[in-house]
Amino acid sequence: MRYAYFPGCSYHGTGKEYEASTHAVARKLGMELVTIPDWSCCGATASHGKSHLLNIALPARSLAIAEGMGIGEVTTGCAACYQQLAHANKRMTENEEIRNKVNKITGKEYKGTLKVKSLVEAIGIVDPEDIKAQIVKPLTGLKVAAYYGCLLVRPPEITGFDDPENPMFMDNMMKLAGAEALDWAHKTECCGASLGVSNLDIAVRLINKILQAAIEKGADCMVVACPFCHLNLDYHQKSVNKQLGTNYDIPVFYFTELLGLAMGISPDELGLKTHFTETQKIMNQFG
Amino acid sequence: METINVSESITKNADFITEIGIESGQPVQKCYQCGKCTAGCPVAFAMDYPPQQVIRMVQLGMKDELLKSNTIWICASCSTCSTRCPCNVEIAHVMESLRIKAGKAGAAPAGKAKYVEVMYDALLGTVEKYGRTYEVGLVMQNNLKSGKLFNGADMGLPMFQRGKLQLMPPKVQGAAEVARIFAEVRKMEGGVK
Image (cartoon, rainbow over all chains, first blue to last red):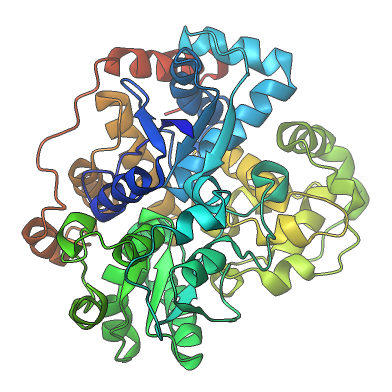
């Protein structure tokens, strides 16, 4: 398994645990992630609101570079980067006029030969036996609410994998890691994404509903697959507590962190010590 | 909402109706107002018009009301509506097309809608300059332009203590190539900030 890897702009900042745990788990699984040289921003959650062309052209630059690597498949951990890359890829492979226009804008020729997969899909399609073979410290008894959010699974014409209303890829991975994956209702409810920056008062109401649903089902922790979901559900728990008078403190991990823990990778290497919620208890139990 | 003459509105804004259809690539005229989009929308509570009404307003050519609404900015593009629409209208794409049009017309209303536009500009401003998003620069620009000076100020220290704050801007060799993308799009479309 070899992928051209797109780290995404939060890889050394707010999402650094995701980056670290992604590489650690990929190594265990024999998955080679080759970083796209000199990749640039995909447009994140902003370019789609400014210009249709800009929104395709920003990710297209990195797609053109990735195509030149001769690997054929691109993957990225961040759900927003994935959506942007997959959207641009679809528009450019389906429509020659758009492809030519965008290539003129970027000054790089993208022919449209790549497949774009989210990291959840890339790890989710690994033979379950190969994952099981790496599990040395099973997360027995740990109740996990797997949260997918929006951009990994919607809209289905772009994402094209898993069920957009009841996705199971991360649930299945948590089961392979020995944990109990909870059946809960808010797997794909929106966390507010960048409303957490522009209008936090709106975002806290969304975050509150998700946390409440996970806790009511008895979750010990949550797993996510997006640095923005993580920022909102992890860091902003205290904003919810402050604005709505709640008292949440539920650990929120990247799915790669819990997989890594079950694979015997050290909490330090995975980044488990830089969260804003309490992670010590789970580290003591399984680390 | 005040009474409008539907025939007049449709005739007067026929171009607008066609443009939104083409730019979004969506069969807006197919909507029969079932309301599934509004039922599933996580941010409908903060909108002035719920999603299903927005689609109806496009059908009726209510251009001015739409371009001045906060709905088109508050939509988080989560695509719950698009996924559930029985007529396969990607409502989130329609919202985007409306937002882009409103942005070009300088029509984002003050308050929540404006804060969204300011965030877009702050983020894309760092991308145009450095080639990647610069989180610290983004927050600073966002706060200056929105007037919410201390927005997220309490994040600084805890982020720094966890090594999550990148004090220096990112370095991309091809930053000039990224700036060129912005310049070319401006040349082709005009008016993109």
